[in-house]
Image (cartoon, rainbow, N blue to C red; front, side, top):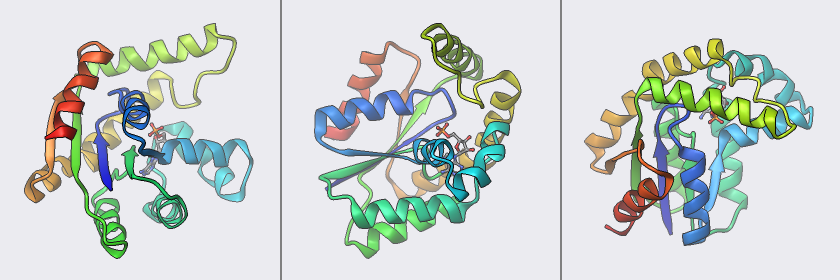
Length: 193
Ligand code: AMP
């Protein structure tokens, strides 16, 4: 099994890079953001409960997202998992460690994608515009106000995970500013090592 966390602020490229790892290594992507958006669009009780929190750009409770991940780890068979957008708090990181240990699994790598704030905001604004240009709808949280809150949530609650995983010895940092393929190559280098 290969278990990898992609860590980084909103707009860092976690989803894009997770998609590539899925194709090239037969891993399953676990994106709590995708799971929550799915719950929201299918109108489940939990989906309705989290919709406002997500639209504002705040974090959903640890209990909810840990529950989502627990269920996937119990039911999905895979050669390994890419965690995309999870964990986002220290409590989630501890819970993930416990869940993996319960299944006799370990974490192989935590890859931090480094991108400056100005680029992050620009990427998210572009993503929203592209969604609309393609005839769809932008994500409810891809607006400037929510992006500011998402960044603040990242620095307050998620960035401490960088130190946490550094101390555990499995952190690698990758420059997330280059072309998509360049970042892919840098990540592949970490995964192979
Ligand atoms: P994402 O698609 O990863 O950018 O997540 C979109 C939104 O879903 C976040 O801004 C949060 O509101 C919520 N969310 C996703 N993953 C988590 C998580 N691990 N913990 C708390 N909230 C989350």
